[in-house]
Length: 132
Image (cartoon, rainbow, N blue to C red; front, side):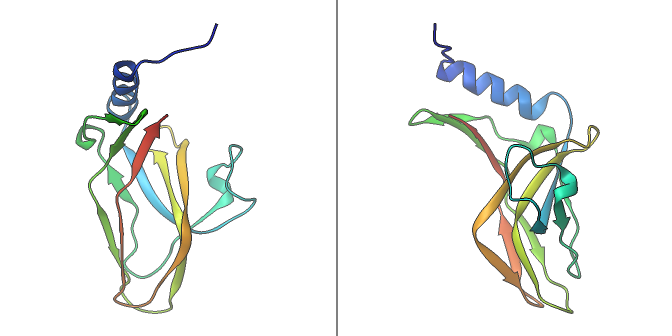
């Protein structure tokens, strides 16, 4: 028998996943080895270090209620912004999300194209998660 999770169930499962247990930390990465995959751990990531960079806390109660469209249930957090404060340029490959208390890598995404930040450049990102 095939497992079926109705849209209403996906919304509730994702809502609980995002709001029940812990806050998250959003981090940018500049290198990863080996390539991003299901066996990736935090130790594979090299976190950004440009002047002005700090990891961002994603508060569990601030995630919007998930919605379903075309069979995909998702939630998108408010946009986060980093500004390069000066010094050497740094190339950002993607972002990753870690549980604040558990320290577990929850998910990561590689950008379609790397983003090189020069002094005064900004990177804006709206973290999201989805169930399909």
